Image 1 (cartoon, helix red, strand yellow):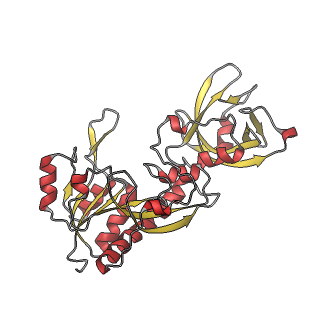
Image 2: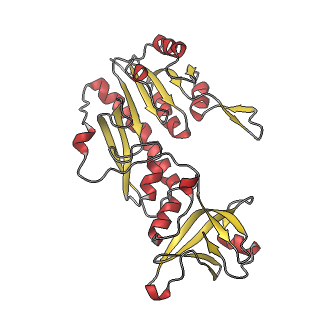
Image 3: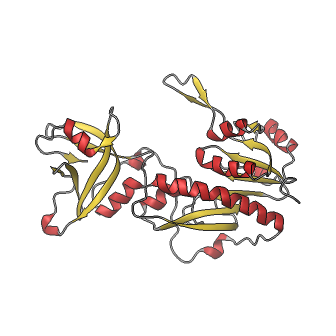
Length: 325
């Protein structure tokens, strides 16, 4: 079968999923339908509906778009059947019921932003950076019942530099992911795919999960953390959703800060301060950690705009003892 004859249904929602769809469309693959989330209410009064990035791109390309609320709804399933897909591709969508992923004769494969079986879950890029990994990657795999556990088709490894934040890694994986999706389709058409069960890929190293990120997940815990751990935590959540903490002044007043960029200063025990102590010197804002200081480079005070620390310090007077909690 030629790629022009292969009927593909594509499923995805956020920006990360647009690049793979673009590669399919511009590569001349036959995308007969796009499944994405329903439009999302936005604005102060939630009275404006915003289409997902995938829907916006699909409509620009004149593709047929389906937006089911429930994936087991019979009306949706019947419409999906009418598309007569040979293959379904999922990128950053949602968990599919078996009646959906088992529908096409060639199956359904997913693009996941980690080197499976590591970092199964909703936020693999964030957790890889938070945990200080020096390598991650992308994986295509066939869907089965348990989430992110199906047989692996292909993988591409990607280094993570110590200076990368999650936005840097996200962009890199998004671009590589588009190419891996089309390469996977080509190999399926050529009959050269040799899948590997994830159970055979486990090397005895403990598997690290990648659960969904919530607001409380993003709060910085200063106690018992090394400077490196704090540094990785901040960059693993930057630029979005951003790590946050509370700044307490000498009068007991507490203000919330988001922190976007930092650098490290490790010190011998004789030069360390009490954990959480804030030190301002030479135009720098430093927070004492277990083994040194975390120096804050970019931050955002609640109700204010994101700014460089030097600009923040010009408008914020540190009189007395401040601490992060």
